[in-house]
Image 1 (cartoon, rainbow, N blue to C red):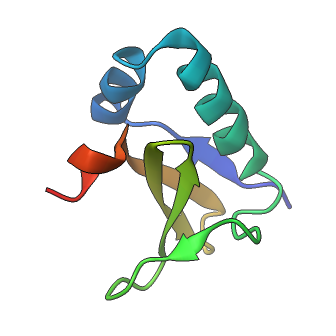
Image 2: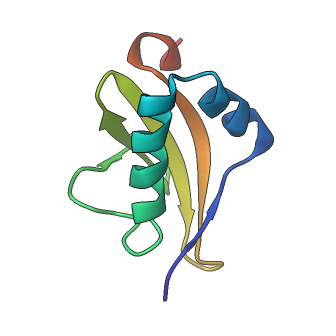
Length: 85
């Protein structure tokens, strides 16, 4: 069963501030999470039950998976130097 991808308004604002070519790649990668939310390029975040992150060039995207509701919710989408502050 495919998962539903949720992009909250704060994350949408982060995406809107990115260069268009980077934003397109990130959105493509995020849409791929509908069929497989835990692919080989995702890393489970330590200290969190269902939070994962992926690296896309210099950018990091973190997301949370809810298997009960079959949703993937984006949490952050930022440059690597900014996301861990």
